[in-house]
Image (cartoon, rainbow, N blue to C red; front, side, top):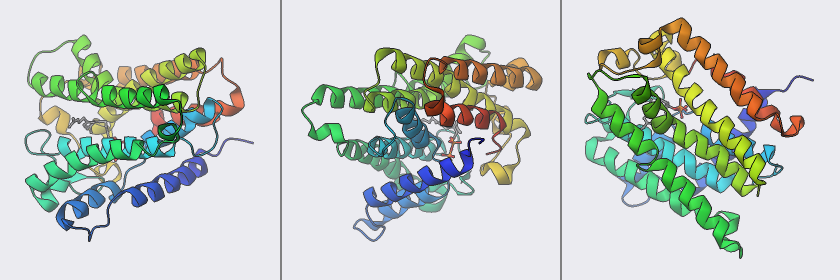
Length: 299
Ligand code: GRG
């Protein structure tokens, strides 16, 4: 029977949304402005791809239960913080996100900055709920914290965002573009795959396969994002499009052209799938289907 990715993702999206709802303070909790803004940004749409990748990676490594859910929830909080800050006037200056007004447009800049900060710090509090936090295996728990912090910080997402901002309207080559994409977007996605593996106590070769898949899928995801910025539909994507060109940003379509970018996207997803070939096929079905989904995604 063909694998039903839509049902798989719907079910896990529900787990993640329930976990997000449990960890976020109620909107009415004092000071309500910040809690309202956090909830507005987290629940205003979002595919929950990163948490689903963590759950699917844990499954590929043999852990099919919800053990990875706290870390999956934390990574969605960090991802949402990055979107809130990325939309700020000092960064991408976007009015729309996830099909609604961006956080600063709705609540003002100060609250949006604080909401992003609070989502990031809440993420680490949620990780402390991780089952390893309460077991004698505190080295594994420290490892999980380190993976998250490295992927989100200057060695990962913040580093990529910094080079992205400094490169606008500059002549940059393919190596800078690769650095930006692999760090700004790829680092968090790759970390999701590794975290799923670490939580499942994967052996070194399984962890390497997941890392390799994550690196390729992370870059593929961003290339698809570049392509959608050129030929996507604003209503479906849920944000302003055509902004990369307008802001003088370096992208795959700008560097290679649309057709070549699409070929590169497919090549990366094929290589990502190949990286999983040493793992049991039944357990990697979700990850392989997510790869195909990334090639075709419209939002
Ligand atoms: C502010 C430190 C800091 C970093 C921002 C991730 C990022 C770095 C900026 C976002 C800019 C952007 C739109 C990048 C393209 C790839 C990307 C992360 C798209 C949004 O992710 P989706 O499509 O979003 O998974 P949803 O809303 O579905 O969760």
